[in-house]
Length: 308
Length: 308
Image 1 (tube, rainbow over the protein chains, first blue to last red):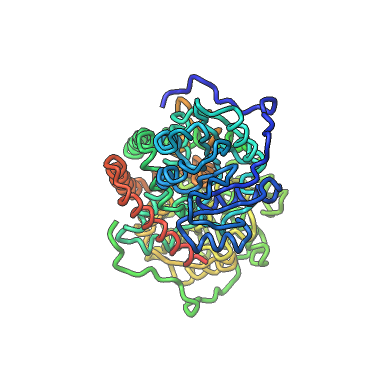
Image 2: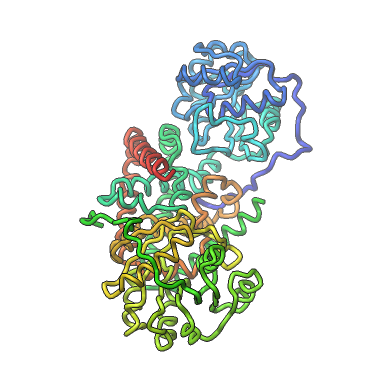
């Protein structure tokens, strides 16, 4: 990845555009961690009159109804005709099918957004599947994952102080973007804007690659001839390193496949890091190893400090 | 690594040997997270009359005195002449020098142990440096690391319910082993016994390799042309994956160098995992990728369940 030539602009408070009408009816595809938390946050703020959930799992939808996360469950994508706002919060591999199904039913005032962790593929799908409604689709990515999934993991404050990145289309109206921003601000999120390609490169490096490495390490231990014994002695470091290997396999399959180009670039970079580590180990270069460890420790400490 | 042909025996309660005398005076080299927590635990249990600390950092020793972790600070290794029990809890790279310095001063009844994360190198050092006192050295490894270091990170309950692995020497008397076991039991630890080579292979896979990968990932992001921006979007998954990259660089340098043979074997295994992942990504094999992710998720869930 090359350094970006443009600064990523954080949406300024000054630029906030007031929305002319509240999103009275919200339709959510995929009422899991992200979709469910979005629903709960809007409800908690009194920002939605009616929330309708759709999804592949009837059991999950029934649970969402029971928990009061949604007001109504539906199996009919045509229900988006009643929506002011639509959130597609399914694995990205499902989004094309959903966009195709809702396109004929979207009203002119309805805004559609998504919660996908990759953006170039979702943008391409929006043009291909939403067709004349593509301008009403504002792509988004809430940076608030967790290894838990399903509606039981949803909580109203999941997005509080978390980042949400929007990658608007050139065709999006200022009003459509403002409405999506307003909904996420209602959830307590901080909004950022990026280009889809830049988004995908950044998240390949700091999110998709670590997930891949974490899955790969657990897989290595599990496949090890001595695997059972190894797990017996795995401790706190292993637990935290591999937390994200408990993430939803289908969701991460879709992300990795969708963003494989950028991911393969980062993976190649990581292989170069490992080659360097191997060189240091083989030559017994203790000073070189310590230098690398210290560099990483300092970088992480700076990052943590900035996070606080 | 080949599968072990012998089961690792957990020291049974039935086999516990009563120690004939309490370890009245305990000398600790390296009063950091491990050494300081050991001191605090023995003190909390009333199991030591006097705890003497030694270390390279006078500031850390002064702090340990002030916090009441130790009763006395010393700069003279000959003080081990007064010790019933000695714990060497420094980075493994320091241990040879310390063993050499204390060997002439050890009394016949004194038992020495260590807290090193590698065992083959420490065992070799014991024979080479403790010489005629080697039989009094019972190698150990408390599995209770943290990314924090120094005496301020020490706490009396650090070892409660944690594993401590001993890799006794054939020359160790049953009484020496029993005394080290008794000290760790006083700290609340659960005791296990392994061969040094087996120990080093196991921890290369579940501890040393994850540390190396975590350091390497942070280093990759820090060295990235777009590094600053990448850190801006790093979130919870990155934070946990890289927690261990905040570990003590010198300590981990020593561990990686000492155990590099086993570590290079595990690293080669990981590179094979990554080669497989690349193949799946390049060929767009979504099903293969999901299968691997699901396998890892299930293995981790089983492990977590067993931990509880």
